[in-house]
Length: 486
Image 1 (cartoon, rainbow, N blue to C red):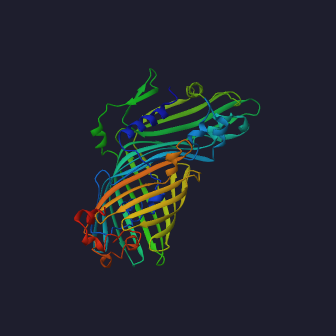
Image 2: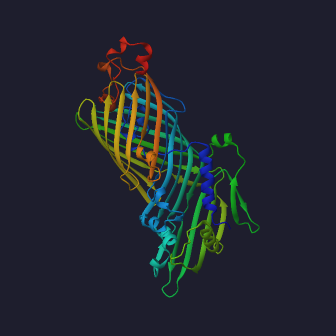
């Protein structure tokens, strides 16, 4: 059996997702850009200041990035050798590598009375790997530190999904100070891989320097791949199935359901609190669902980490020796997977007509790992139409994250670009986080001046929300400048 089959499946899925959209969803800086209509994607309570809003089809909101709590690229190598002491030193009790995200293909909003209606079509994809430090410690430093102990190594959890969602959201103000919003989304999975119920551990005896493995490890997947067995019917490799992008993208055999909810509360005239819970849902995989279970026990002579063994060849030989002694069971069977729930919390304080200070946090629930990030930022309105934001964030156990964003709010045209870590693009080898979000949209049926602006939308009532920044002398300008702000 090829011991790297699970990782090849991950790479295959990564190739499938790269052919389509792949993006990330950290979005702490963007969460506080309430002047942007697409902020509703992160908090369904956000309304729109105009009667109609339409995100630019295919370009309403595009977001790409990755997260790594473990290492930066500069940590990996020492000259032409693996920097194993530094890699081992970077390990935490639990770590996460993730690439996940969201593209809003279609985003339509309509203001009816006190209600805001929102219909959104989104393409969402994600790859992640969460793990405890025990298995990497074994590989990087040997098993000398675990003599006489049993250590679980099944918390090595790959996870990958690609799905499309069709969402219908409602939001409204209930008492003039609090605004609530909910969104229901119908999901259709395209490809998925998750860890199944597993329990595997290793131990090292005090009398002999041997490693003993025992237990089971399970994967559940529904991928556009073909599994290739050997003469003994053991799966040895996998390859992409016949490439039919249209059938893949239109597949509706893996249904699911998800819910989002949000609240915005104006504490006083200058302070606003907000919270949102996203991606609370599941997918049922039924197109070509497979279950791979590896069970049994094995023993082999351990290693002390004093020699150079961190190489692809060494790891392949080590895994071959181990996994040839374990039993493999491949079967068909549908399965359910939960989405990765996200919780956003925020607060902002209006210092004056142009300046606003804010705090925000995001927590995402991965297998065996809660990934939390914090941000402190400020927003400033420049002239009538331009809004700028800067933010400092603690992301992936690193304080080296300087975020920034710009939003152009014309009467009908909206543009934005934002990143949680601009410094990552300047120092890519030292960063653990990279992301970028851009988007565009249009509004019409807008109030002609500030007296007619909506007051039931806390964001629209804010001087930083762009509700009527186009008012005043606009009627004296040309048609193009009135519409776009340029």
